[in-house]
Image (cartoon, rainbow, N blue to C red; front, side, top):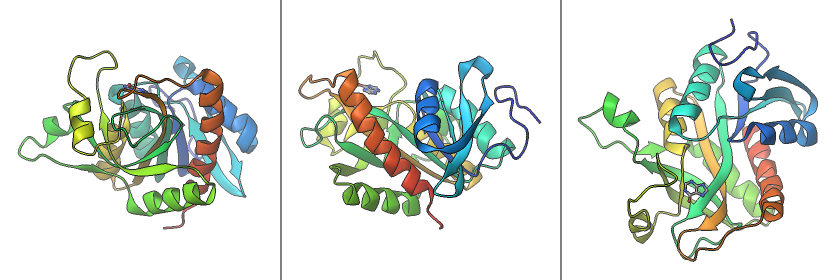
Length: 235
Ligand code: HPA
């Protein structure tokens, strides 16, 4: 049963999966938010754990950075292990003056510089969209927790160090740039499972501000709460 990148046996991974980019964040979540967490993966250091959250079986696994990396893990989790609800939790850079550092961005849709969708469907300009049930629940959970959140478009860029004018999308109302959401949403569409990406703003391309690692840890903890509560969605 193990796949090329995940050494778990069938049944060791939950249908509900939280996906931070950093595998050490996956470990942090397992240790601080899940009960009876058991590690199911260490291949390539991409740590994955399954435990329970409010009585529900939940898994958490790192994805690495960028669409190629998250696509490998999300594909195997969905196609081989039966994951049905997958939520990316990460950081993003603000493209819009309204979106401040430490705010939460819930990606309703993701544009991308990647060719993943174009390769398969060259005849369409397809929007990559979040699952509405997860989106709705994340928004209301963030509101209940008193977090400032924005629902809208993000750019999933292939390059962290690129030269394209990403702020042009800010002028179209796009909120932030990150590197994975469109890949996850495409796989959700392809396999008809629910996907969502939520990100805290770690830096602003508009003002040049950056968060400290302590601030990132604090906002990350709030976001975890949103991610885990949203995974409990019954729809
Ligand atoms: N670009 C891409 N991904 C990011 C950024 C950024 O500026 N900030 C956090 N993730």
